[in-house]
Amino acid sequence: MSNKNNSIDGFSLRRRDTNRVRNLGAEPVPERFLKENATVKPVHESTRHKEPSAGLKRSDIDESLKKFEEKPFKKKKRITKKGVKKFLKILLVIIVLIGGFLAIKAFIAGSKIFGGNLFDAFSSSQPLKQDENGRSNILIFGTSEDDPNDHDGAALTDSIMVVSLDQTKKVAAITSVPRDLWVKYDDDCEFGYQGKINVVYECSDPNKKEGEYSEKGAEALRKKVGEVYGLDVQYSVFVGYKAVQQAVDAVGGVDVKIESSDPRGILDRNFDWECNFKCYYVKYPNGPAHLDGKHALALSRARNDAGGYGLSRGNFDREINQQKVLIALRNKASSAGTLANPVAATKLIDSLGDNIRTNFVSGEIKTLIDLAKVINEPKIDRFSLVDADPALLTTGMISGQSAVEPTAGTFVYTDIHSYIQKRLTQDEATKENASIVVLNGSGVPGAAKTMKDKLTAKGFSVTNVGDATVSQEYGKAAIYKVSKTKQPATTAKLKKTLKTNVKTSAMPYGMTADADFVVIVGQ
Image (cartoon, rainbow, N blue to C red; front, top):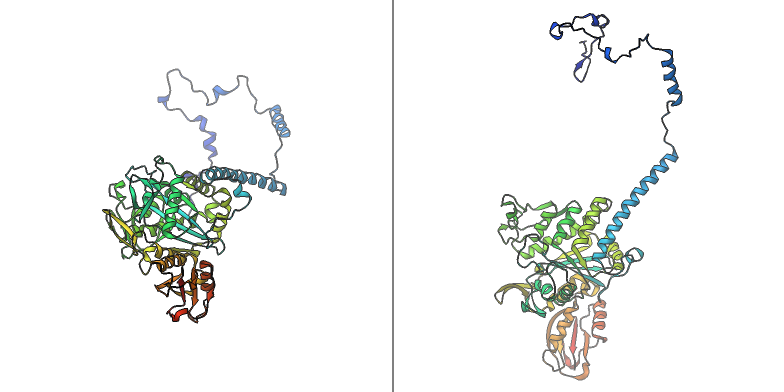
């Protein structure tokens, strides 16, 4: 067995040489350290008491023992139940203080965002407003007025989405509104009497100052989107440019799935000027991607308008990615990990308070929170009008501008209404998919077309229109069940919509039709 080299921090340990210690004082001092007539004093000569000492005295020992008697050694304390309770009380106080801080932050932020008394949010839930189909419809829109890089058109609402909630069925749907959709303006503004829908918010409030939120503008946009989509849009949420970036960073980033028809994925160079084109803000292969705030915002704005690949549909692809980021943020923000982290929660509250405005009242907050807990991603239906079959929208040039308009014609929204109703309600009548023929028995030109539009807007499937024998026998409208297929939900819905009974007898004057129902418009 080899000898061990005992050492501490590299220093070798040696045995004590008693002879060396004993003879140390007798070793001569080198001559170069001596001066003429100098004498060498012992090392501690200058620190000794002038009086001669005969060594350690009895009085010194007594003095030392006296100190130990006055301050005896303390035994190590054992942890008792009383000590644990005290520690838990202190910990509880800390938690309460943190919770109180977050509550104050939330109160301040909520006071900015919501109307009414914020304490109502903690007392009882207030049901959300509903349309006739039991849906609560929320418009989400944003501008880039708070973009630090000034640019033209910052007040345009280039991001517009509709979220529809069903409080009873606990389901939701989300769809986008094309920013280039051509509409009529209800208010005269500097842009004219018609144009793109992304101008409505700005032109509806001429007194709006740059960077300020306008409830008047939000109300006008809610009304216009409702007109196009056939919805009663009760609520709106204005999202500032920085809100997405700050909120995503606050929750530690979000995860989205890149889905492109291009096998390479997506690339957009529109934002790479910020790094002198030495980096990529939007470059991802198809598949999962984790995004921080800056990159989530860039993805939400990417549409290949400055080169790249994978976003061939431009704005339509951008709208789909905006939905993905929004849902991913909702999932992350509502997760237990985020809400339990005081730092993350504080950042999230700050980002919401600084960048979001809405017409929700405080009493509705608890309802929204409760719905968010139960409506998870599988219960959220994401869809785009662009993907409808048959096509609902087309692109073209109007007044020298690229625009999106209904395939049925400019300002004709009946087919859009029908599609939205079918997609959102998914009621029993929609599932029955009954065919309806509308006949004009009033003698008034266009009466059948008007009835068709009314029924289509309610989600009915009108397959044809035509003329019937003119008669007062029909009243305002007559409904006939023609086929033998049992369709009770459609029967009940037609009865409620037209406020008349459904007849099962044969149609008068020998009329026939190849449909499930026939509606005859009377005088």
